Image 1: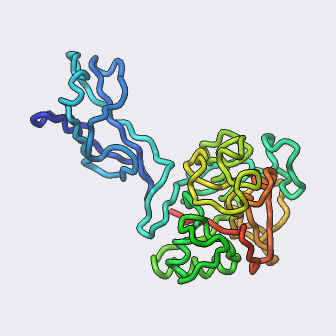
Image 2: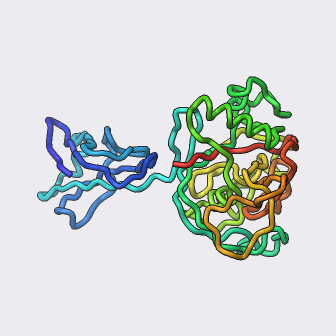
Length: 318
């Protein structure tokens, strides 16, 4: 890192290395008046390669407007430090979908202790699952996004562009994804059931909540007690630990897996049952009671089933 004064600014040049493809960092600049013995709060009057969403590379630059914070220059041993944290929040894809990076990790899937006595047999046994990196939609796919791709809107609760699309079957979603991938040249897909639950739990940032982002469902989700018997625009409730919205309530979300019973053995990137036609749904919906919006609860249906409480969100691998 190199800091140089240019007229009334300080220009800090640094290299941001070690990020995987598609990863970004949250970059901040700090100033010390005593040679690095102590650091104050991050500098505020900065522009350039600073803040959220900074991509890796050499020769990054931050420009500090020093006259706006001249009180930070009272010492006689001024030094600077660039701090970067892996961004687990939103990246904006070129395809109009906001995706959240979920770092690889291992978690306990199924009926864990915070679920109390609410678990059904199909959530058992709890078991260890290890997943690779992936990106998942910050929001459920909306009516506007569906209509732009498919030319029509199957939803019951129309005239709400930013409400999640609903009334779509698993098969309908596969057609949407095929069209999207042909248009973009990418490999969007539905999340596996394990990816869905890991993301809903907050990934490696999980705080062990019962619902996605809170122990109080009303803070994070639309369900039978607060929905007014309809869906709501995505992102109106609080996000979970990874910055993902509406994973408890609003609409059930299709997963890629065939439904099958859990095994007690540890698994890596599980894909669901190897046979059968029934597909997994997760998360609960606007008409669900609280127990069906829990992180571990499982639902399922035939792949051509349509109802005004079923939607989806996208996943793409790095």
